[in-house]
Each structure stands twice: as C-alpha cells, then as structure tokens.
Amino acid sequence: MAEARGTATPAAAVSRRGTRLLLFAAVALLALFLAGLVTGAIGAAFLGKDAGLLPRPHVQLAAEEVLNIGGLSLRNTVLSNWLAMLALALLVILATRNMKLVPGRLQSVVEIIVEGLLQFVESVIGQAKARSFLPIIGTIFLFVAFNAWIALLPIYPALVFPESVVEGGQQEVINVPLLRSAGTDLNMPLALALVSFVYVEFWGIRTLGFAYLGKFFRPGNLLRGRVFQGFIDLFVGLLELISELIRIVSFTFRLFGNMTAGEILLLVASFLVPFVFAVPFYGLELLVGFVQALIFAGLTLVFTAVAITPHEGEH
Amino acid sequence: MPWWAWSLRFAGLGWYIALCILAGIVGGYFLDRWLGTKPLFILVGILLGTVVAFYGVYRMVAPLMSMEKNGGSPRNSNTGSRS
Image (cartoon, rainbow over all chains, first blue to last red; front, side, top):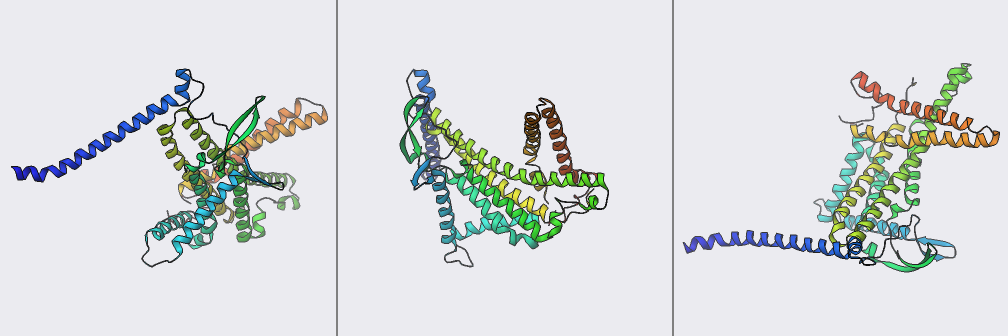
C-alpha cells in the first residue's frame, strides 16, 4: 500500500501544484485588476481624488518633434519607423547569415514567413508570376506588420521627455513619447499608398503597354464620329481614373485610422484602469496590426492582378 | 482570384461614394459663389455626385454580377491559379 501511494503521489503532486499555480496566477491577476481599478482614473473619480496613477493621456494627431537640425525636424514616428526597419533588417541578416539545407530555428521561422507570403501571392496572381511580385508585396506586409507590432513594446510608452505646452490658456507640462507607432503619422500610410499606387500603374503599363492607358482614355468612338457613345466612353474613362486615384486616399486613411485608433485605445485603457486591464487590448492590437498588413499587401496585390489583366472591349 | 480577393476589391467603395458626392458638393458650392446662384448648383452637384458614385459602383460590381449569372468564374479571372 505504501508503494502504491509512492507511485501515485508525484503525479498528484504535480497536478496539485499546477492547480495551485493557476489559482495563484488568477488571484494575482485579480489583485492587479483591483489595484488598477482603485489607482486608475475610474478609481480616482469614485474616491474623489484629483488624478489617477497615470497622467491624463495627451492625444495629438500630428507626430511630435524630437529633434530639429537646421529646420529639418525629426519626428518620433520616424524614429520608430527606423527602429522597425532596423529590426526587420537584423532579423533577415541573422536568419540568412549561414543558411543550411536543414534550417536552424531562426532560419525556419523566416522561411515559414516567406513561404506563407509566396503562397499568398500565388493564390491571387498565379504561380508563374508570383516570384516577381513577392518582393514588394512581402515588403509592404512585413513593413506594416512590424511597424504596428513594434509599437506595442513597453519601451514605447516608457521613453518620454517632458515638454511644456499651452493648453486651454494655461501652461501645462506633458510627457512626449520619444517613440510613436509610425502608422499613427499620416505621412507613413500616405507614402506607402503612393508606393502601392505607382507599383500597380507600373505593372499595368509594363504588361499591357499603351493598351493599359486605353482603360482611362478612350477617344475611339468620338474620333469615329459617334458623339454620344464617345462622350459616354470619356466619362467612363474618367470614372476609372477617379476610382484609381481614390484608392490612394482609402489606402492611406484605412491604415492611419486603424493604427491611430489602436494607439488611443491602449492609452485610454491603461489610463482608466492601469495594469492588467489593457492586456486584452494589446492582444487585439496584435491582431489588428496583422490584419491591416494583410489588407494593405492584399489590396496592392489584387489591384496589380486587375491591372495586368487585359480588358476586353467592355460593354 | 480567390473569393477574398473579390471582397478586397470592394474595400474602397465607401470612400469612392463619399468622395464623389463630396466633389459634387464642393464643385457646386464654388460654382454658386462664382455665379451667385446659391443654392442651385450645390443641389445639382449633390445629384450629379450621387449618380456618378452609383454608376461607378455599378461598373465595379458588374463583373461579379456577370459571374453570378454565368454560374462560373468572373470574366477577367484568368489570373487565378488554383480554385
């Protein structure tokens, strides 16, 4: 009987220890949540205190200036952008430094990413052309995703410098973050949208030549003397042109809006209830970053696929 | 093209409609100010913008509708690989 107990005890002890650990974690989380509730802005409002643990979040749409060298201003979003580029470059360099046929851990992670992207491109544009589209589409995806994810690092809200501003007629000292998610600066999405736009048009012209421009300018019927049909054609071409240009706007504001909303959501969540309350939102922002990267890259890809498809006489 | 690519193509439709109508309004407003015919052209602009927006949407969705009618893949889907 003693022996039986001896064999049964370790497993039971492990499971009991696991349960205890889980219980401890749950209690700790609950305690942190309650502490956050009391010390945060919500608690402060209920307890009649002036302010919570964290200063009131200062939301500014334009990126803050960090450095100004002879009129050239360096914004915190640009710094973050460089950081993301550095991280991406380092990842790729480290992964490809000594490549093996049987990949190591890092190499296989990067291989999974690249192969996944290749499959993504293949599914839209076909296997034959996929490899010539992968570089830009993959870069857009990784760039957007890394820029979104890197801003979730705890150093982002932690690295701040004080700056006095005048708000509502009174002097106030606010903490300006040294780093800020690049997507929250309208310039980054706009630049990326322009790259995507130029890329789509470039492939359209390269594949179809002058026939591609025929999508926008179709004077054929007008020159042949059919005035009414000719004007309809001109109008339709104009519509195509407008929808092409509007894509820049929609690309820009989709990314900018999503990134900015996420940033503000995190700020407000951690201001209202500090500590664990913001954690689910961080998870959400991970997902949002991935989805936005997928959408940006996917849209570029789909419109390129449309642009390189020869269009028939249309109706 | 896979099914999700088709839905992605229409992701900018909202902006298209909004900006078309907005362009009509802004154009009408300035035309009114120039000619002193407030509020004639702003109303015409709204109408024109709406018509243009919906005609554009119709043209964008037309390939998808013809696909549904034919019960097959859309006419310009020869870039798709599998499926």
